[in-house]
Image (cartoon, rainbow, N blue to C red; front, side, top):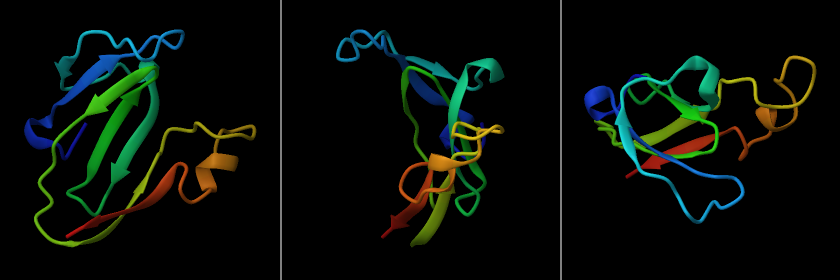
Length: 102
């Protein structure tokens, strides 16, 4: 994980059968690669790259440094197709988009 304040994030586990009853949040500075379901990556925001574990809510803080519009992507192959890089991975608004900082 890079680009977050303190290189950390808060991870709250969610039970898919009961997502409105979250588990206990913990602060982490790394995630086991086998647990990553998505990433939230914005290279223009200080190389922001946050691994998102499956079945979890993640919170983090960043310092942007400047106003602007920045691209973000999920770089974990979570889409369709034989290599996981089709469908949602290439559909704006799903696994890619923009962040506007005022």
